Structure formats: C-alpha cells, structure tokens
Image (cartoon, rainbow, N blue to C red; front, side):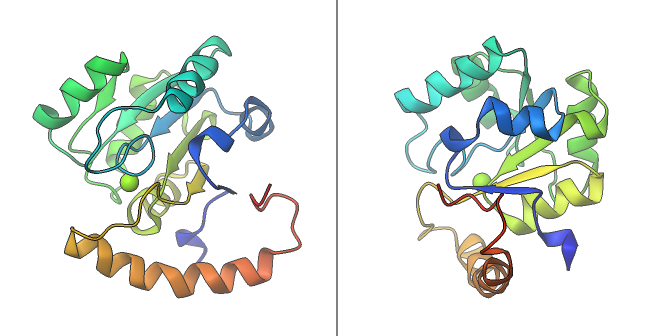
Length: 174
Ligand SMILES: [Mg+2]
C-alpha cells in the first residue's frame, strides 16, 4: 500500500518551497507536465509557475521534465520553457525516473518526483526509490477515459490516507 503514497503532499506546484526541498535533502526535481506544470488543454505556463521554476533554478536545483508522452510532443514544450526532458518515460515503471535522475547528475535520494497521479508518478517514484511530492491536479480530467478511471480509484485511497494523516504536520493544507 505504501507504494502508492508520496513523501509529502502539497496543493499545487507553487506551494512547494525551497525549504520543503532542503528538508527532503534533494538537489534535482523530476517534474511531471500534465496537470502538474500545465493543464492538458492549455500548454502554456502561468506566471506563477514560471516564477516558481525560476526560483528553483536560482536556488540551485536541477530541473528535468519526465513525461510518458513521446519526444515529439515533449520537446517543443521543454524547449519553450528551457528545461531538459526525459520523454516516453513509461511511468510507473521505474526506469524513466532513474534515467532522468542520472541525466540530472543526482542519485535517487537526491531527487524528488513532483506529480499529480498516484498510479504513475507516485508509484513510479516509490518503485524507483525516489522521494515524491503529490499535488492536486490543476484541473479535473474529463476527456481521457483511462485517467478518469484512475482518478475514481485514487479518491478512496487518498481519502482514507488523509483521515489518518490529518494531524500530521506535513500534510499540505496551508
Ligand atoms: Mg500528470
């Protein structure tokens, strides 16, 4: 069961602070794209996310996009925002995350996976032995049937977990 849960919960990516990352002892951020950095249908970054990315780079973190999409789709986005990428990562298999860690010049414990899906991002991070931060998706999925199905299973899992963790300090209700 613990394979499905993150190290830390936060509401959105801009709620992840430099202090959070220092506390986790990481130096490289492995970033999901859809519903983490952007929505599925609006591929441009908001000013808040742009500022956050710049802040993380200034603080000295390596940033790399890890996506299940093919390079043809990831590359233009990555180029536009000036970040390296690892495409066709096949999350939740652990190999993409490990490859991305290597590309970022960090070992597993020096990385953190930041994403919005339990069954791809969190499971993949745990299988790869990498700490993780689970975000709430920017926008609820309505179009992609497989993701909608996964969300239905995620919900009860997360609710039972939340009830147990409600009093814990690290739960991201700030
Ligand atoms: Mg996502």
